[in-house]
Amino acid sequence: MRAIVQDRYGHADSLRLVDVEMPVPDATDVLLRVRSASVNSLDWRIMSGRPFIGRFLGFGLTRPKRRIRGVDVAGEVVAVRKSDSRFKVGDAVYGLGSGSFAEYVAADERELSKKPDSVSFDDAATLGIAASTALQALRDRGHVRPGQSVAITGAGSGVGTFAVQLAKWMGARVTGVTRSANVEWLRSVGADVVVDYDQADFTRGPDRFDVIVDISGLNGMGALLRILKPGGTLVCVGGRGSFGRFVKAGLRRRLLRQPTWGLLAKPNVEDMAQLGSLVVQGSLKPAVDRVYSLAEAPEAMARAELRQARGKLVIHVS
Image (cartoon, rainbow, N blue to C red):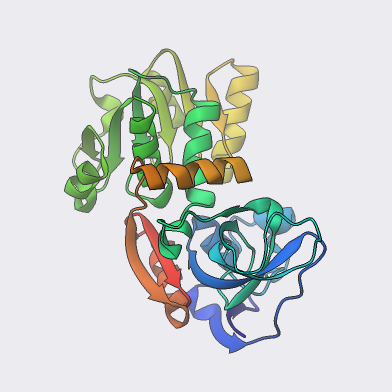
């Protein structure tokens, strides 16, 4: 099969499209014919080997532990190992499958959900890490309730565009913070208020928020805490200095009793099924910036690493 592989850490030019052996599913895996995948910040962080501590936490110390890039996947089941599997050959599914930038991937069935017929493979492939991160940040850490005010930094990103829509679905008034090029587009995604960070620092404005989901990492944690309402919550989910911010958020919460959380999402079947249902209902619409072929995956990864993407980048495989 064809796959995008990487044998050394680096930039997008370290990725190659080559022929490799088919994956062999283990006892809990199903073999998928990949129809679509999508790009996450996790993919280019593994590609680059940054932050360095990630190499000790599973990336691989001197080279990527897994040669084939990609995590989010949507595809068709072509082989099943378990006699009591939730899936059968021919089922259309979506979720997580490490090594999804390939024609086939072995994916743990515990990390997959059945794809609704009305949801395209391209859209379904976006509902893994980014959408799960947005949902868990708002629901599990922010505890967003109807009528609350929610600010989302990096709102034009993959996680951000899902977070804007999910916060609106939860009944919140949403302020999205993004760069100049995304302002009008982000309004169309659903933000009530859009702040152009190239023109203004929203932490110096008059507005106060019940929940802030910090995706960009461009603002200091102290500045974000100052614009929280009493009883408010700050959730850090990524962006520049993400690992350090996770540590700082934990230390502030434990030592200073400040309402700060770092989130590393744990996608699960129930959340992915709910996200798929929201797409069917029209409450959630994946914001797809561009669709690439498998051979163009290095181009997509380069765009993602430069943080040029608006919403999600999709790899259409077949």
